[in-house]
Length: 110
Image (cartoon, rainbow, N blue to C red):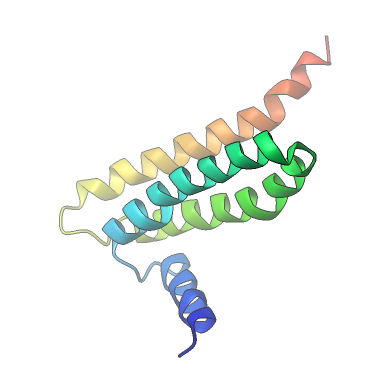
C-alpha cells in the first residue's frame, strides 16, 4: 500500500468512526492544532498575502475532518465518559469557529 493510500485509509477510518478515540484526539486533532497553528503563524509572518488561501485550503478542511472524526469516534474508548467530554469539546469548537466567522459581521450592522 502506498503512503497516499494509507493516509486516505486513515482519513476514511476516522471519519467513519472506526478509529480509536485516543488516536483521533491526540494525533489527528491535538497534534493537528499544534502543527496548523505553527504553519499559520509562519504563513502570516513570511507569506502574508497567502493567509486567506492557507485558511481556505488547509485549515477549513482539517477543522471539519478533525471535528467530524472526533464526534464519530467519541465512544471508541475504554472509559465511555471520555466520549461525552470529547463531544462537548467538538460543540465548543464549532461554536467558537462559527462565532469567529459570523461575529464580525454584526460589527458592520450597527
